[in-house]
Length: 168
Image (tube, rainbow, N blue to C red; front, side, top):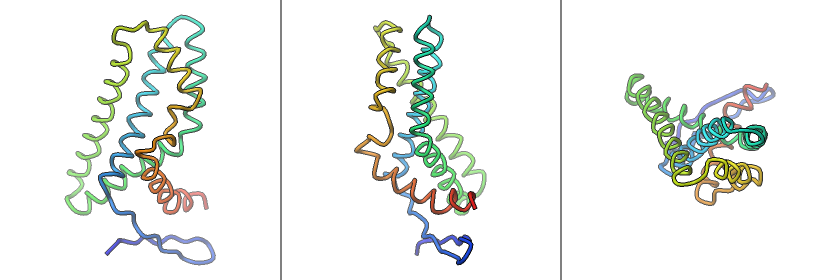
């Protein structure tokens, strides 16, 4: 049976059905977190180049962050949700190890993404291309046909359970 969580909506209590943990949702969360790490790392690397690349990259990254913050926040929430389920089943140490290992994996994957972009290419050109991709929204997380539906369900669950109750 699905677990339910209760929260007060003010006038009446509501029960929210817990979202089942699936490989597809875990992969969607991983995609969002790895992408966010990669954008941050690419931005840092490109901002080390001579002007005008740093300013353009900082601006493009800031706008990407604004457009994608809800998805990244929801993806991180999903990791914490999975961690809490693991803690209830396998104990706190197992759950802590899951989160540490998972975040380290996302970090390593994002390192690989950034490193691969610079192999045999001019750094300025790579950065200019990333600025263009970030600015034209083609790297926005909601454009993923593979992960979009699962990220939408995670985001809806996050908003229904935690974000809306913390805004009351």
